[in-house]
Amino acid sequence: MKARQHAAKKDVLTLLSGGDRRSIGRVAGAVTMVLSRPVLFRRLVEAMRHEDPVVRMRAADAAEKVSSQKPALLQLFKSELLRLLAEAKQQELRWHLAQMIPRLSLTARERARAATLLRTYLNDSSSIVKTLAMQGLADLASADYDLLPATIQLLVRLTRDGTPAMRARGRKLLARFARQ
Image (cartoon, rainbow, N blue to C red; front, side, top):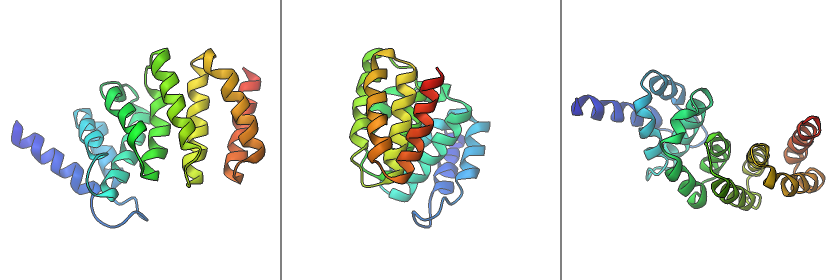
């Protein structure tokens, strides 16, 4: 059994390794593997702390894709993901965490902390990180009325002053809130 687990871990890491950050490599294969054996999701979470930035990026990408189909897998790793949200510096890790964190079942205190951390992502140099942080903030605010007024106010400002991607995302998010 241990040998099989070690082989599976190695296989997932092998799929995430090689090349450079301009390529997603074999992330699709890792996603398929983890979806068929959800116990391997742990390997993706662990790999988000890997020494190789390519592996970290691809692990976060695969974890985000898996969790979009099976969000319950995230819950076992809530504490680790919230720590990563606070500690991550790599832009690809940040943008995938901004997508995954709102999928977690969070307490009001955890949501407030996650929102605070996502607001710091708005200072990132990456427009993708900023745009996905906006999305994450809106998703958190949708689940917590206490976050809603400040989030809408922030979205209004970012829709006016942000990058083109932020302005476009802001318009969509504000329209969604207007319909609610």
